[in-house]
Image (cartoon, rainbow, N blue to C red):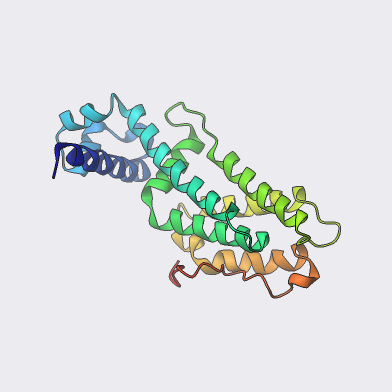
Length: 211
């Protein structure tokens, strides 16, 4: 392994350790010694990569932002049904939050403004939802009289609520929770021609029945 490879692995280990510590203890109560110990490195290695705790938190947020943006890109790609892609994005984000502590910690740090930074990751998510609903409207996928603005508020509010509840109980992020939500929303949201065509459980062939 080259020196550069070791440096990359050490940085990633520090980010994951920091995410675990921020998730368990919060930003204020987490010290750099805990982060370096969790990554299995000396404090000097941490300071080689990060100037201070705020810089570590920024790196955690950056990693979370990349993962969430990749989920948004997945939703906007392709020519399939926009409503189905919206459903799939919400399930994919839920799986990320359930499985990836860096995404969970990064989003929480961002929302709480723990390190004094303003990124508004939830605003980006809202824009993703609005964009897919606007596409659905252009494709004639929305029910008569339905505009993108109204359902976007409901979808963002509901999925944000699930995310907050999941801080105490990850079962809220399990696929049945979002599936039930979409079973309630889709009959009101989708045009009659799409009745039964959009899978509320998500259409991702790589999905896990445990997610």
